Image 1 (tube, rainbow, N blue to C red):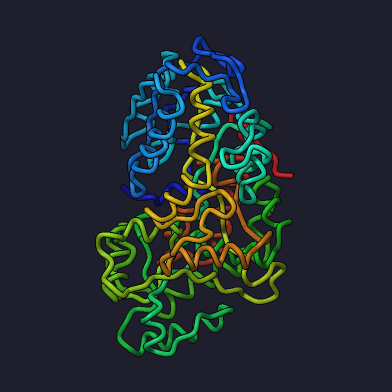
Image 2 (tube, rainbow, N blue to C red):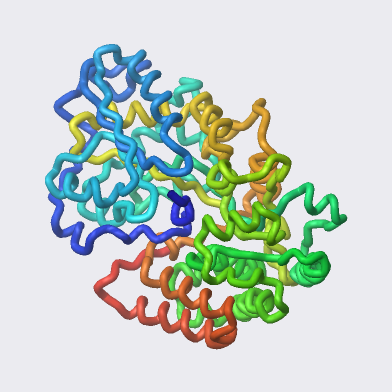
Length: 462
């Protein structure tokens, strides 16, 4: 199953059934369950050694082997514990009834299409506040708190209304992907500006290869480079105004310029014919087959394409080029943590859930994850000393170069209806069924309608 919505810390979270918050019973028990044991330096949460632990994991492109390995460590620590492990696809459909009934698992990997609505669960006090976990000693070094081992933005990404409830395992970066050998063979250099991108596309087109393709059935893939270019031009102030639903935020000149750039790809014939009708797997397969040179995606791409990527293809990620006059460095990228882990407050073994995540977020577990799935983990130094694929190496280098200039859109997490309106309009924009000016009008109206809707909870980015 695709990671297309995962990750997008820029993704739609509101796919849970309407009214979930009203159906569940508030149940935050402050981290205390009937299976409490004695606390110690090696057992900071007081896990009872023989308490069963239930772990439910989304089994998608990343698989669940890394979780099963961590469960082995847990059972060595708590010899009497029996672990009930479930690797599933439809997390929301499977677990929503259990949350309503007050009998959720102890640990949930809430990922994939149709996942649980975290905001609704948090509002109804169904999720454990994980601040205690953040302030616990890291598994690797008892003198270092777990929170101090994390990459930038991980805590912010998982915080809802001041409560840290969503602990993200992977660190996802988005950009434009290409085959390094293909570029080297043709003497193509990765462009730093959009004008250079257009010149590159013209050169690529002359070889008979389509310059770009994209996952047409999922236009969110093209939304990302548009928003990155817009924020580069407008800076973090623009990003905050968009996230905070400020009047006319989408009418900023940088937003319109970015929309014009994306429309230009189609206007100049730089998109592979038929791309709009392709699924993510179909577009990515065509790209791997050399039918197109560039495709937008996140850093899960290597894992998702593992079974169909030709030997020697050596995919790497390049930063989205700037339009000019950028208020952020040219290396600024969209990056955020993803692959959410939750500890339900009404789980039978809350302490065990917290301790399991302390183990899962250890550097050794993260290294195994990085090596096996080719994705950057959310803990600092997790890739140090390991041999990385060209793809993972390019992502790691992109994150390093970006530094603090990482772009992460909160509105795509907070407001599913706005996310859909933006992506649906991008689909029309890319195929030139609407103009950039019409795209701006549509998206601004969707944001204005959302701002006026008193039935939807509003959030503020500071």
